[in-house]
Amino acid sequence: MAAGSSYTLVEYFGGDDGYRCGYCKNEKGNFSHGMWSHAMTVQDYQDLIDRGWRRSGKYVYKPIMNKTCCPQYTIRCHALNFQPSKTHKKILKKMSKFLFKGEMPTEQGDGEPMDSLCEEGGPLGHAKVCHSEVESPVITAIQTEKGDTTPAKFETPRKDPVSVPDEKGPATTPKPGVGADPGRPVCRKAKDLRKERRLQKRQQVGGGVPASATSNPATPVPLSQPKTLEKLINESLPDSPLHRLEVRLVRSNPPSSEFKASFEASYQVYKLYQMAIHHDPPDKPTESQFRRFLCDSPLEAAMPPDGPEVGYGSFHQQYWLDGRIVAVGVVDILPTCVSSVYLYYHPDFASLSLGSYSALREVAFTRQLQKQSPKLCYYYLGFYIHSCPKMRYKGQYQPSDLLCPETYVFVPIERCIPSLEQTLYARFNQEPDAGDTHVLKDLGRALVLYRRTVMSYAAYAHKRKGSNDEAEVEQYAGLVGQVCAERILLYRA
Image (cartoon, rainbow, N blue to C red):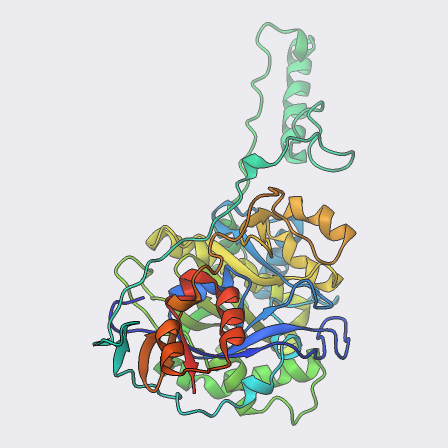
């Protein structure tokens, strides 16, 4: 948070009522806590997503994990250590063939795009309409518990999310068919093996003696290093293509001139996508709904000296093919990660697997930003939903972690899957005594905004004797944690 200039301001809505689940279609099985964010710093949002929160427009929600029908676990990929799988390489080759030769694959794409299904996955009653007097808040003073007032300026500590390191996991022997067999030689490329066999044959023909019996055996062919993701992406973009693909990053909040100029074209792609992929009726994906869902953002733009050149905040990553938009990835750039919000594309290009292709480009983009800001090294893919098979594809971006819903530490996904195979809800941290390091300890220190004045909850409660909102405020503060509760302003009417 920039000292003295930025506050996060929210209105809390609780989450007692069930609503329709966008994954299993249960009409009343989805439960989550929610709050409307009028403004939010990137550091506060980083800390919130590291506690299981996620935004849809300006609405920020947290699934009630032990109650909801399809538990949604925050998933992140270690971008610097990411190695594309065979499937990912095929997707890049598919794009290369299309750009170079114009060959459009006949089969359909890889299923779910890189989106969060927020429109279906979260309640929109509050997200659609939130008319209140704090639309453009004016903070006039900060009041202490003793009743003193000071100018509206403060600094807050920042803490990085805690991770459970891989070393803590017990060493296990790979199961049959899983992982490398230590008793067998290292797997080598067929091309290298053919070269070695040809060399051995030449030696046998030339001297009449098997190559293995010579005093100077053939020099082994060095194993080729796997290609980096960046090299694979560059190879998918030929020098003299039939079609030209360009990726542009435009800031969506506050909207840049490039964003404004391309808004209509981007909206039309979204509308076609929603009708073809999510089967929305033509009157549902309106321009106002598009703005509210994918353009409006509570995140305040920030340009700190130790951040990336483009700064922090909300952006649209536009994919331009031959001069027109064919796909858009909505992303948030935060202090330690790039967070994927949504991906929509023109239905005519569905067979190019643009959901997975854009995710690979976003991983590479994260690695690019990390060179400018070393702590920005993770790629967040939204929620991993093991109970929904079509959403398991997010676990293919390895190495990746899932967030423990009880201790809020990240645990390698391979240690989480066995538990999720047994039950919908699981605690991933296996240390029995471990707990939430930011658990609420002092409700009185939580900050509220009351009558345009920032004050502690203790001062607010003293001012409003007989107030009956303590249970609600305590629930909110427990969900955001002690650190965020002392930093975020909770609006009180």
